[in-house]
Length: 387
Image (tube, helix red, strand yellow):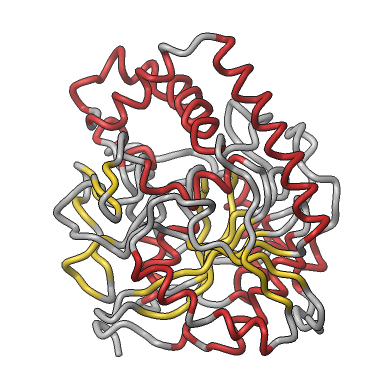
């Protein structure tokens, strides 16, 4: 995220000395509302992967266990929030970059509905990547959204809605609210400890008056759709870097960009067609349920010394991002999603619950997350490095 006068490296040696002359729109809006920019936090190279390390600054460690990763791509943001260095951060989310590090730092990360926070950059029509907030509490995230969101005449996909109401009360009655509870989205690989921790919190929603049922939408094609459209975006963003600075790129960025450059126009068109079908399924699903609850990650925080998990619960991963399916699949359906602190593994590692609601119902999503947060108070359990 560009910040005027502050070095913005994107975790790449190509931009090690890059100092933007202008703020990104999301930063400009925060400043106009009175926010003070304290600095930048660490990210993987070009935000690729949910493990925050790069050749410029090295790795960012998990505040709850410094031998583990903090996730990514907004890993530095998550750790800074967990350690009390600042109350709010902004970032972007393509395949979980706001949600994954929030889960592993015991903080809150919101991926808003596409168009809620206007997209900047050369591809403003896209709805795969979206900017949004992270914070220690749901209320802090909602307050940020009241400033970050809103129409932008230069962004064709921006929602034409005054966002001021996001700063209002999040309290509401959840009696009779229908929640679909999914442990693995129909058999996707996940480590048992993740579902065990989350299942222990299912009763919280029932205590709030919700009707919780085991159910999940058919998102069987979501990961393949995500992979194609992610590769498409990497090809666009990295083509010149591949040509001019290949020796400065990490292997996974090269792989992702080359996958995109090999795509045919028909591949992208079919992915968009399938994504539209998935969107229709979600609309029908939300006629039956008000919310979907599922894990944020398939594994707990892994060793900071490995770039990504290659096996999840005995299943080998084909690519460096396959283990990120809980966030990737939700990105593909264009619904708002939030990660909220939901407990800890027996080893003391944070686990996040992902809540999803129908398209453009971000406020209702924040309300449920706020109610869960109030009933559990996990966000108050600070890491040992600062407690």
